[in-house]
Image (cartoon, rainbow, N blue to C red; front, side):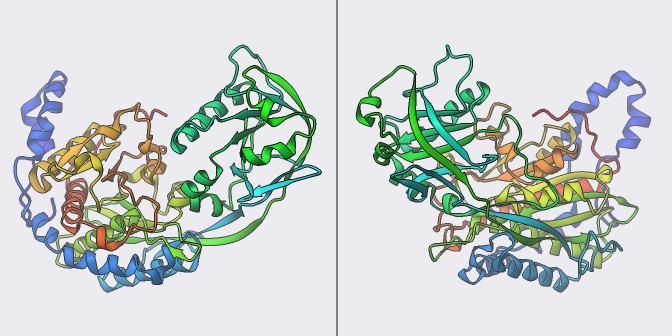
Length: 521
């Protein structure tokens, strides 16, 4: 612990005086949580008290306002948010990052990275009588066509892929019967795509009578752009598959030699003659985005680092409607501001952390975890010296599973690489925040795969123990209704304190936590 604090359990003393033999290590594993939670740290409590609901409300009201235009990655609103975060770190007395590497750090607070924006609307499916484009009878996912394609025949698979076929023609057609809910239909489509990809399909076309519903449901995701890191090549491997959904009503125009009405009733496979062209026209632009860095230098263990992350970008504006992203992830962003302020105050008063702490709001999460990925590939501080990453992504609301239950937070990944990290987080919660820690989404077979869907994963994949704090998906997820008025600031505050105390313990304990498990995909 830092000077003046109540000392935590001394592991070195325990090893030298109590264990006496290697076999006693088993006993130590069971004693870790008890020892860590045996008493509170008066300094931790003092600086935790500087994190207030009022401050978080003030910050979030600004960052999640219409003026910030949904903080879209690489766009004006995201840059306004980056400037605001920098100004708050400066106000709290956090100096620029002391790294003389202009290729890594700009102005001492920004890690900038270059992006390529690929705009949608570049795939057309056309014949002599009709042309289908995005929003005009066609939806597509990804842009994995490697060139324009003239198609003279489709392999018709009815409502499913035959398990008997060892191989399929490059272009495949299926029809969805319309009886499923829209979300069920998408699950069905993806499942068919996975099976057909294994059999060699390069393009899969699915005709659906649910086009209007799909466009309404997927909304922003369909009309938005795709962004990738500029220093990484666009990857289209030999097994990539282009998935295209087309309007069943418009299908008739694509079958001049076959009746669509009769064809749609067939259940077996057959080859269908057509005369159409798939046209791929890339549309690309350049963007620049920033991770924002607040570095609190440690004392006697300053070469080691604890990282705390949250993404401050969101999905921008669609048809004049601002997607403010108050919970996703304005909530995590303002939590970082509070934690950085508390740590900076502790350091200014001579009680700073033993290990250094990097509080890093990252951008590009909504585009594929790009900001954190860039940092993991171009770390400002060595990853081998990085003890852990504590990542916050949506901690401001209550999901449907907890409406009538005690205050909670989902904890994801804490034990995936280090049981020590898991034990410390448990102890911090027992001793300070007293939340119900829900590990539902930490299950290896979690169908949502949340472990792989937020910024902590880019640290975990490099071997850095990581935790993802999350309060669950709600009806306003990626919708215009994700506004400040719906944030539960008491819960946001309580969850933020858990992250602060876990970070405080990680930064001040005698020995760094061990990586004692291998990463599993």
